[in-house]
Image 1 (cartoon, rainbow, N blue to C red):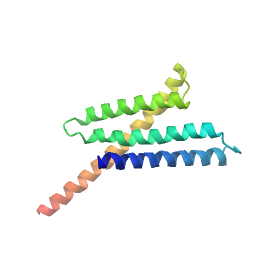
Image 2: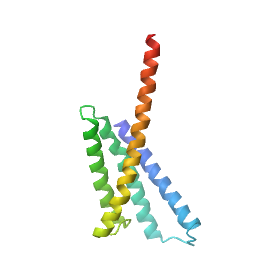
Image 3: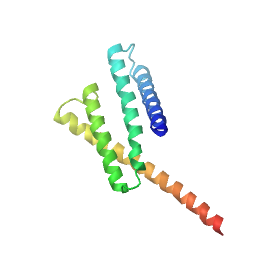
Image 4: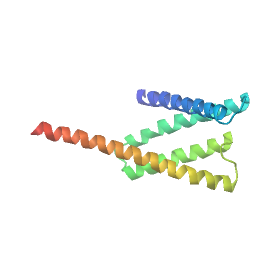
Length: 138
């Protein structure tokens, strides 16, 4: 339970960071003078929820009786369904076939790159731990 609360907090904070940086970009680079408060709140809540479910869904990777392929499949399905439902509701993706196809074309490479990055990182961490154990036995 503690792990879920920590991940929830981290995910919500990350979502807030993404929202603030996005607002800075829109205002600074886009030259926007002001933000519509209703749109701001809707997008902020979307970012917070997105950060929350992406961070808490990683708990699926801790179910040791599942294979990595099954863990990845379940994580992918969970976050994909939640992300697209949220995206359509908030208005990040238009609720059209073209909008869905464009959203998928953007989402899939990002998911693959992030998943691969974490896989390589954790594989490297396992190597460091194993090397430490090997050196300790000698």
